[in-house]
Image (cartoon, rainbow, N blue to C red; front, side, top):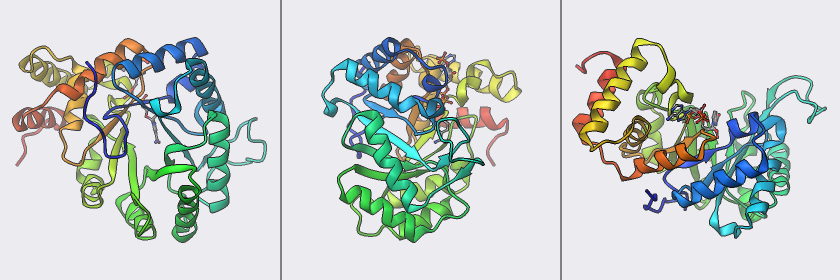
Length: 302
Ligand SMILES: NC(=O)c1ccc[n+]([C@@H]2O[C@H](COP(=O)([O-])OP(=O)(O)OC[C@H]3O[C@@H](n4cnc5c(N)ncnc54)[C@H](OP(=O)(O)O)[C@@H]3O)[C@@H](O)[C@H]2O)c1
């Protein structure tokens, strides 16, 4: 079922992440199929990072995009920088580290544009907060890449509420401000509901993006009591919703939150993208939402 509602950043309500595709070095033909099926299902937003596939993922995805012969406007491209892995592809890296410095951000945007074969990114994220983060320096670099037309919107990933607030405070006047914070978030990883992350996103109208929205697959294969309880609740709610599948209910559970959570799927299977896209048409009522919450926590709310 196609995803219909337009998103504030022009992104589809569900995105497809390419981390696992990069890890398994999905061949071009499989990437082309994945892109085509995603677009058919209404998923037009693709989440990448410089480090995916040991620094080769963007290149592979760019090749698949070129082979797809799609107009650039058919897709929304997200990339990230800031995690610096030790790799033969980056001989200057002696030690794994984070780098949110201005020079690194500017150079990484240029490198992502080149490897993806595009002249702009729809969203550029700072992948992880650098313990040596200088908010003025990072904000200036983010402003520059937006003002140069290389990036439409900027955001962060894995930032705590205090880190997000600090950086956002330096981006006043930038259209869109800090547009997204991509964090680990699923029915099995609920910390952002209680640690202030989703509150701040709602306050700042910043889009919370959920990475590992299906718990990295643990939702289906996990052998813990928690995972088993959640599977039972997802099945019950899915049945009440007319036969929705567990993946659809788990995603709709995230999307029910008023902060506008945008799940980033990780599957490499086109059929699973198609199934997941059906989540956009589901509307859990408040009690169904709490049924799943309480199944996950294993307790009744006070
Ligand atoms: N910003 C960050 O720091 C960060 C960190 C991690 C990830 N991410 C982003 O988030 C994306 C998603 O992360 P993720 O891959 O962990 O997400 P996920 O969607 O929670 O997990 C994907 C895994 O679940 C399996 N799966 C999906 N649907 C299934 C189903 N119906 N039944 C059984 N197994 C199923 C997939 O296997 P199949 O492939 O076989 O379907 C895959 O192994 C990444 O690609 C990346 O773009 C960002």
